[in-house]
Length: 164
Image 1 (cartoon, rainbow, N blue to C red):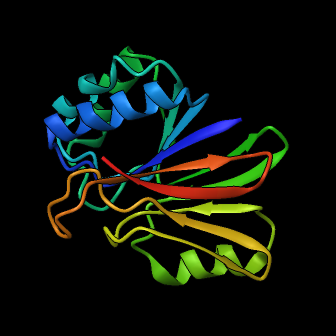
Image 2 (cartoon, helix red, strand yellow):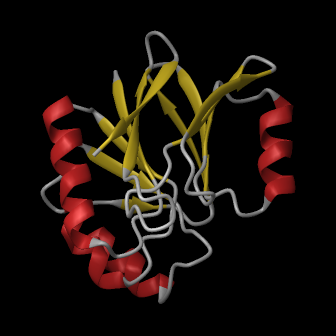
């Protein structure tokens, strides 16, 4: 199973379109969004996504109830600040990552096979104590100048970062 991983879209609509095109072309089965969509109007830009999407809220997400309602209208599940996902036998923790102590605690429990987070805007794929840790970077490209997404392969339990 292929899982698309995105974060920090920050209302940058043309880049959301690019990320969705890339994930649709890659044929991902599921998309995980680690938060910071920002304004509720950005939700509707995800409608062309062919895969199911699950997301969490980030520290910059405004009008959270309207954001959740807009995503719900297009069939996207926004879970709050944390989501536990089981996909193809892989246990995944999804959070924004702005609470560093919480992020590290979740990683250190070794309960999850994969921990997905965002917030830093810097892409990263690493392993710690047998846990795959994935930060897809930023779709918006505002801070680093590079728009990136991640793709997780549940069979190999490995992830790659893709520039869009």
